[in-house]
Amino acid sequence: MTITTSARRYLHRNVRARISALLALPLFWLVVIYIGSLAALFITSIWKIDTFTSKVIREFTLQNFIDVFTDRAYFNVTIRTLFVAICVTLICATIAIPMAFFMARIARPRSRPILIALVITPLWASYLVKIYAWRTMFYPETGFINWLISPLGGSSPGFGILAVIIGLTYLWLPYMVLPIYAGMEKLPDSVIDASSDLGAKSGRTFFNIILPITWPSIIAGSIFTFSLSMGDYITVQILGGTFQMLGNVVYQNFSLNLPFASAVALIPVIIMMVYLGSVRKTGALDNL
Amino acid sequence: MKLSTPAKLFLWTVMGFGLAFIYVPLILVVINSFNTNTSFAWPPTGFTTSWWSKAAVNEGVREAIGRSLFVATIATLIALVLGSLAAAAIARYKFFGRDAISLLFVLPIALPGIVTGIALNNVFTNFLGELTIFTIIVGHATFCIVVVFNNVAARYRRMGSTLEEASMDLGANRVTTFRLVTFPLLRNALIAGGLLAFGLSFDEIIVTTFTAGAGQNTLPIWIFQNLFRPNQAPIVNVVAAALVIISIVPIYLSQRLTQEKSDK
Image 1 (cartoon, rainbow over the protein chains, first blue to last red):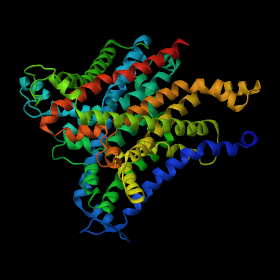
Image 2: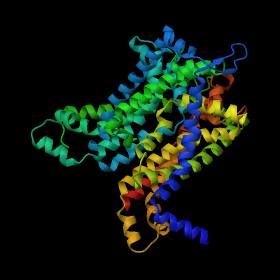
Image 3: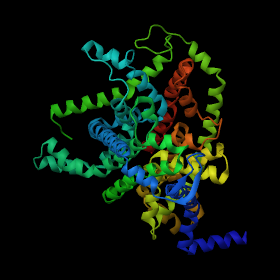
Image 4: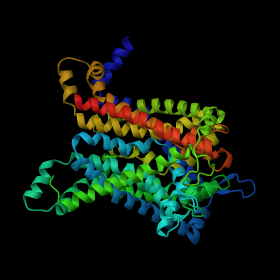
């Protein structure tokens, strides 16, 4: 009892001790378990591998990075992965911005919670279920898409890069809508009224006022869509046919050549860190 | 806000298209779970409920659901404690390294899951020797912490510190203030963050693939393993349809919460 009382008194007087008490456990978890594992992984990338036993040999080498950066094939995979991630992010933003605007400013306040619920619900439906749904839809001869567009003379594009982009867009769309909605809802009416009072048409108000103010929320959404697309390999397996992304290269090399897999895994991490670093100033990280 | 008619029409169209885009695939999954044709050719040739009764007694499915529920529950509990502790520190105090720490709390969701997955796998297999159900929980808790942290930190930012200060000015100590003032204000954010963390954990497959021990199938892993087996396809479809239908429950719960909030 006296110990707890004195500890309580100490914490009361000492701010630093209070902060440490709050942060000790969470920081232990994230720094030791998470950052520690990441660091261990990237140390592995400068180690050798015994090609017969697939055992890691703890000897320094830069060969893995030389392989990654000199082989044209890995450069192409990186470009393809970036292309898919950028496409998915742009398509998500194009659909999400008008949707979020409609939900936050046009729909009646009473119907807003229903619209939000409609957008959130698929977040709870399983990831695999959604990709599986698209697999049955993209099926070349018998799928829903083929049935839908064959009367117009088209046929299903089948599995490949297009199916992957559509599948990933579908998966991550709600992650884009929600932060943008939150940003647009916070926007004060007075700002919009002022703009139209000064003679701006709705298009101009949107591009000169609403878009710049909600930019941090859009960036926040793009962090999700971009990162989740870059690291994905399961959607690519299910919808991609022979198409491959960085995640697939990591996955294939993981059990046979861990040092090489970690060198490849470093590519999306560096891209993501550069992206996070460049958007930090916008305040997007507070809008996640 | 006043809008021209074409602008309004455009927004209505995008909203309608967006919702159709979201729901058509999900509805197809539910319809296909009654499809008599095992390859799910569209349009269906006939309907049956036999897949549902077969799925209900499937051992693999039951076991996987039980494991997923267990993992999600423990990971969510860990995340609730650690995430809200960190949120309190970040939101209430200014200290050296605060920005670095808030960036650290974004990383587990901002970096690709496969990186987290192989990093944890490498450490677990080297230091613990084998993967178990607890390594799955550790993996899940790592990103669940972030979700809870984000929700609770946002609530802290919005509620300010005036009520807590008032409580302490009136003579309540820190513990009493937390119990009677801070916690009730945070409760909805904790529930929302907890629900989201639970959902993410229940659904996670990439980190799980690398942290699950042999035979430790969670539901997503079970689905993935059976996805390409033709004779299991109808069962997978029923599980998928059931998950779509069950996903309404947490949405309903969180709707109730926001409703309560606006009533007050």
